[in-house]
Length: 243
Image 1 (tube, rainbow, N blue to C red):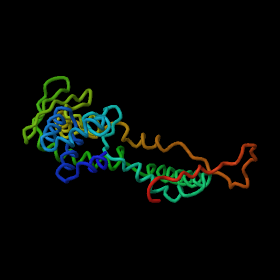
Image 2 (image 1 turned 90 degrees about the horizontal axis):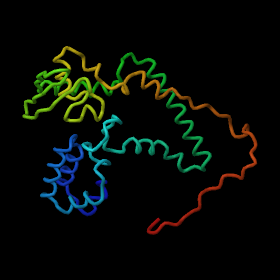
Image 3 (image 1 turned 60 degrees about the vertical axis):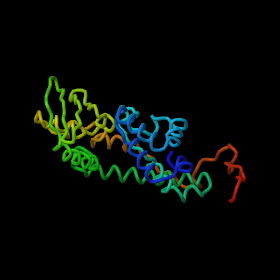
Image 4 (image 1 turned 180 degrees about the vertical axis):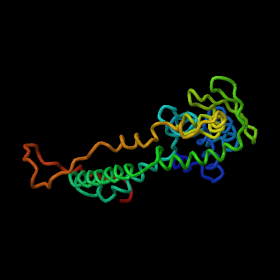
């Protein structure tokens, strides 16, 4: 999205403002950031309003049910770079190469998780520890039935509901990892924040994700004969511009 925008509206200062707006976790703060962006560059603001959908690039508009707050497509880029050589091959060879890569990778993941002794995946634990440090700046006040008002040293104030596992900053709902405000409330009642991490980050969920097996295959000379016509390569279309 930004690569398309910067063709008409370049500039590092504008880029930083857009990233800050994209990372906003709740809508009120996003609205304020967009007003600031409008004052800074009204043309870029108009482009964003007319060419984008907030639910596709702004955390404040993401659904909390998917437990994912990623703003980049790095996962797709990593996979594309891995299969780069395979993409140059004929169709059947390409599929064979990708199949073999996935088969081996999934087995390595299964073997790794079997040896892992923790209950929560290690990368999630690192994020949780970072939030624990930030929780030192939060002061929780219990209201009733697991509801807290959390005041931060830097002036912000949020409400946390431990039973429904949500915070008004929406970070906990977006990624399933207790935010600093939630951790402050959790520790106030003497519980461990690890118990409030979403189940999708557990060892059991990891094992279920990699449980399906991609079966090994024999070489082509051992395949059954088929009456179907042979697979043809796609039509070569000459694109405009320099090749």
